[in-house]
Length: 122
Image (cartoon, rainbow, N blue to C red):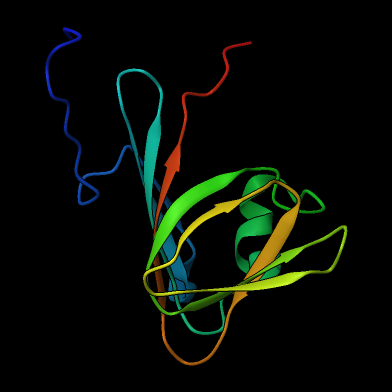
């Protein structure tokens, strides 16, 4: 692809789909440079511990940094080392460092858009 061309992807046809059954899903689209966009939907009762941790190989906490935007719902993010909790709600743009977990608060589903830079090639 040429550097001056606009590249588009759609979440309806993701490159990867993490299916968390009743508790939601994460649709992942990858761009040519390796950067990614994610559309996450977490249903009421979703927790990182129960629903996502097993899909990541069960690390102690989420090892990823997340930059994104909350479309709807209320997500509580907890930093493991300090125990500090932050509530993300509709309209919040956020930057979550690695070393966290989280859960959906209340009876509404959470919808997020997340952005990831190109993964480092080893």
